[in-house]
Structures are given as C-alpha cells and as structure tokens.
Image 1 (spheres, rainbow, N blue to C red):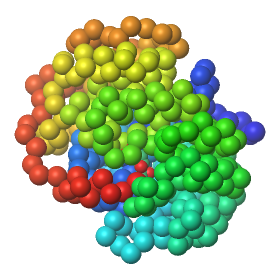
Image 2: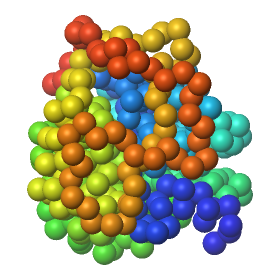
Image 3: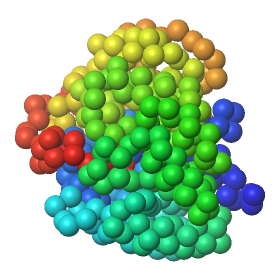
Length: 341
Ligand code: R5P
C-alpha cells in the first residue's frame, strides 16, 4: 500500500491498536437541522477533541470546524436525496476529489444502497470514487446505508453489503451492529467501523460499542448517541475508553456516570460565544495511556494531556462561558430522526 494511503488510514485507525473513534456529524446532508445538531459548531466544539476523526460534509467543515486545531476529516462526498424526498438511495458523488484535497481531507466517504432502487448507481459511484481517490492516496470509507428500512440491519444483509463495498475497493466500511455481528466482520476483508444509529439509552449505546469491538470492529462512527445525549462529553469519553482503553461495559458506564455528574447538560442553545468564529474551544486533549486498562476516572477529572502537535488557543473559555442556557425546540422532530439510518 502506498505511503500516503497507509498514513492517512493510520490517522483514522490508530496503528497501535488498529482502532478509532470517528465522530459523525454529517447527518444534515439529508436530514437538515437534526435535533441537537442545529448549530453544528456548537455541537462539535466541546467534543471534537475526544475523537480521532470527524465525518462531515464540506459545508460544515468550512463553517463550523476550526482549521487552527485540525482533526482528520472524513469528508462525505455523496448526496442528492433528502428525508422528505422520494428515495434516499438516489445519491451521487457531489463533492470532487479536488475539493476534498483543498479541504485537506484525510479520507472520503459515500453511501451505498445494496438492494435498493438505486443500488447500481451507488455501487458504480463507489468504484469510480475509489479509482479517483487512490490516485491521490485518499482512502475511501463506504457506508452501507439502509435509508428508512432499518429492519434490513441483519447479519445476512450487512455481510452482503460490507463484502460488496470491500470488493469494490473501499479501504474501510461503516455499517451497523447486529446479532451475529462476527459474521459481518469475518466476511469483510477491510476494517469495519460501526455506526451508532438512532438515539438509545447511554448504557445501551455503550453496550453496542463494547459488543462491536469485542466482535472485531475497528471502531465506531457515532453521532446521535453522543451529541443527542444529555452529556455528550461524558458519552464520547466513555466510548473512547472502550475503543482505546479496553474498558468493559460496566467500567465505561461508570465512567460515563462519573463524568456526567461534573458536566452541564446538553441543552444546546447555550452561552455559545458567537463572536469567536468557532465558538468555545478549550485546549485540545485526549485520554492518556490509551492501551492500558485503567480504572474509571474520578469525578471532575479534566481531559488529559493536549495533543502533542496542537497549540492551546490563546483564550481559554471561562467556566461561566461553558454553561448552557435552556434549549429551544429542535427543528427536526426526534420521531422523524428515528426513522432513518
Ligand atoms: C448517516 O447517513 C450518517 O452517515 C451518519 O454519519 C451515520 O449514520 C452515523 O451516525 P449515527 O451514529 O448517528 O447513526
């Protein structure tokens, strides 16, 4: 494998354990202002430091992600259908590789819709995307999407979709967790990353993470179960502890509970500093000793060391500036959000 391709994959899936935490915030490309993602920079800013990569569209990268504190970008380059349209599988490539490179994307990603009306179009698009992306050493993450048909998410269907994605040359595949998930992992020759899916109770989302990793997944690409939680920072840190520090479910849930006690709730219309271009963004940091089993952290314990190459911002937000105010009504109702992939 070419150096560029290999090194980009290594910044998404860490070479010490082959695992990664991807934070998914690309939902707006077909869902519009999804609940708790109405103001993307406000959702992203407090939690981005705890992920290894960010799955996002070019519109949100440019408007809502701080280029002064770079995070590996997994750029969604497909789209063309909306939640109120006729068929969610009717997608095409909408963002060029040239623009992906301009953005400094680490990888590109698109959805395939196996068994759907526009299956052929999405699979051929994947082939073309791999052809073009590989010319520039950009890895491709294929997403096995199911549109509104969530019932499709069984091991037989997901094995079929993941395997097809890998056969088309995808370097990583994102799919859903299911019963007998090991079958999906075993029949896919490239790393599998698991999507969180619609919001479920935190302990269940942590169980999904734990079971996925145990079955051989390389990580998670989680969105709603992190930022629709009342405690998104606690949630992403607990997910991270499973993926990188081998926490079991009980340890991770205990960590979540401890961290949640010390944090303001995610009411998401908060005291966001609109005068700063990217909002409140304390210094970058991530948990230490990623490979070691370690006990849950103590209540109020701060994020660990800053990332080695990332400078601290000139101005640290005051604790008061981090206190959210009560939220207004979400723009996309949760029920609608539940119906989708
Ligand atoms: C959906 O099409 C997007 O690709 C999301 O990135 C994906 O579903 C993961 O997010 P969530 O954990 O909210 O399902």
